[in-house]
View 1 (cartoon, rainbow, N blue to C red):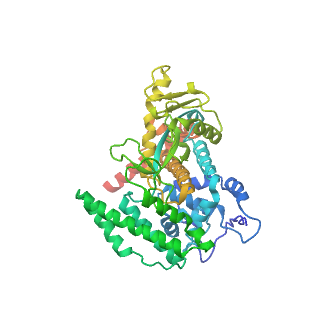
View 2: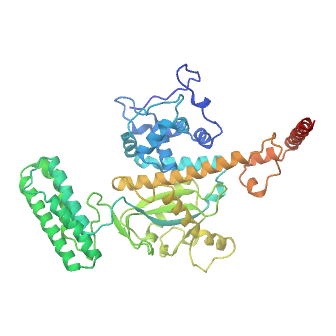
Length: 486
């Protein structure tokens, strides 16, 4: 059932402290909370609720907590713990009075991520709207974009044959214990030692002994698979529960190290793919390919992410460019004039191929296009920030839907971090007339100011009042010095 809309009373409480009396309302997080259109988000998410049942959690609370998690790169538990002792977090999520206990469960964030699904792109669109209204993103910055792909690694260990075989044995034992299937032998103790020794033998380059341990693990895994199939015969519900785990275990048992074709790289995350991007530090990465679109020119607030999307199946980059550009145009609400890509997109199938420029291209590259093409590599820094400052460097969410959710929320967190930095610099760049050390702002300060603030700065009345204030403060300082001398 749709939650009730929270009402702000504006009154004081004898036993509780109001948040607007505790925090600094000029703080960038408080300013950002006032710029986000929470009512519009609530209206767009309303169709996801049922007409029956108890009222759900307030939309602003759940969405705000998800945004805070990805802004500050926190876990679900870390975001809930920080919410209790951080009044700015509570103000951002719509609380009126300071709360001493977390009012909901940590698992509510997981339920909300599953519920939102395709609606997560609304948060990315809202982050771009807030950046535009605050002056950090201009309309002309959306016309020329840079497109690139990266790998979003999954939270799995490096897949070796010994690790995979041992993980399959442990997984089948857990599932058998859960469904009450009593195995003839679990092999947990001896397979643990075999997996450990296989790694040691491989490190010492004693490959005959290494292969002996692998054969030992494969034999024990085969015994467990056959034992389970005998025990669950003619039990329909248990057979359905064991269908996928047994097929994954059989795949792990049969696959070889250097075989061609599809392989399984994780027992608990079968969607993981092996992707090679040609990096010297990481020849192979295990996760999912992710497409990222950013502004080509650096907007006043930085380089914003306009669109992000996971690409399961590791498709060729050039075959994904057309769909990515079309989705980006729908999200930003305007046509893209020029797109800049790397050489991995050669042979793309866009509708207007003359508007796509590839790194290293010579024909038709001159003037502004040449300068913008040189800025193509600036997207690599954005990807690095999304991995280092966000959650793109390691995805802990389950399944392909979790991969897509993590990529979009990471892009939203990146944009909101840029907006917070913009608001912080903007508030500090506004001069205070009472300061005697105020000088004319330099070009770096002026570049971060909006048009309204600049008109206020350069108005004659403002500078006249500022000069009189400075003279008054200086005269007071001189009088104080004369008083101390006497």
